[in-house]
Each structure stands twice: as C-alpha cells, then as structure tokens.
Image 1 (cartoon, rainbow, N blue to C red):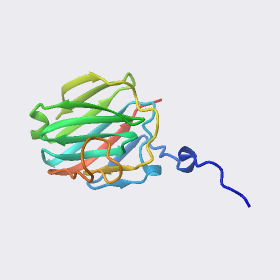
Image 2: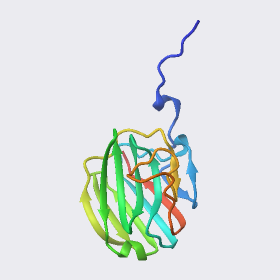
Image 3: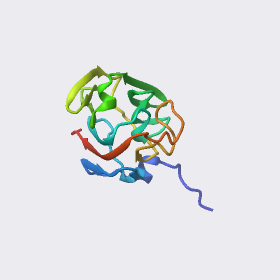
Image 4: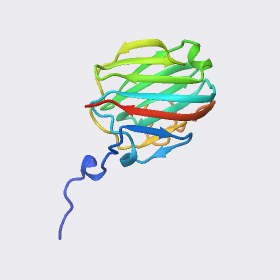
Length: 171
C-alpha cells in the first residue's frame, strides 16, 4: 500500500503569473487563476455603473488568508486576513458611495490608499503585506467561499459593477 504524502496547498495549485487582470461583473476565479498578491503591493480599481451601500466589490480568499473591498452600512471597508487575524480599514467618506470609480492601492511599503474617482480620501499603513496565498479563489460582486470580512456570504453588492482591474506590483 502506498499512502499519499502530506497535502501541500501551494504545490497543488499554481498561481496565475499574470500581472494584470481585467474582470467582468460576477467574475469567479479559481485559486489557480487568481492573482498571486503574496509579498507584493497591488491596485484594485472597481468601475461602478450604479453605486450601492452594501456588499462585496471584490474578495479573494477567506477567513484564514485573503483580502476584500466592500461596503457595509454605507462605509467602504478594505479587509486583510493574515493567518486568521482580520485587519479592517474603514472610511465613511460619502464620496465612496456616490462616485463611479473606487480604488484601493496597497503599496509594497504596506501603505493603503483608498480613492474615489482618482481622489485619495484615506491613506493608512496596514500591519504588513499578505504573506500566504489563500485556498479560496476570487469573486467580483460577492464572496462565495469563506468570507474575508465580518459579513455573511455571499454579501452581494447592492449596486452595479461595470468591471474590475487588478494590477500586481513587483516582488
């Protein structure tokens, strides 16, 4: 009898090597097709057709590792999970709920900038860059697998998303 060796999530599923992703509304990427954002900065730009006050704009990962950009009770949240420790940056600036483009830029220096229609409205240092790839994939407009933030799946966005661009920085 041959017993399988220990399961290794990193070896079992390769990450996409693409540095840029153009995603449609309701995109659902498997882990192996999702951005490899580990130990690097990245930019997420969400183009809205119709604003909304609740729901996930983009989420990758789950309650152990991952990140999400979402609205909850009209406030914009950027959440990062590192080993089950959740860090959330929240802005209740009303511009996020009214504008047509929302972006989150997590720099290689772990500084996060949240912007609406190109205007930076919040800048804050986060604990660190994510260092582990999540098992879960990426979804636009909802979070189907394990949730990154403190919300209940699928937490579908109440507005309408035109598209999402994710650009990965260098390692």
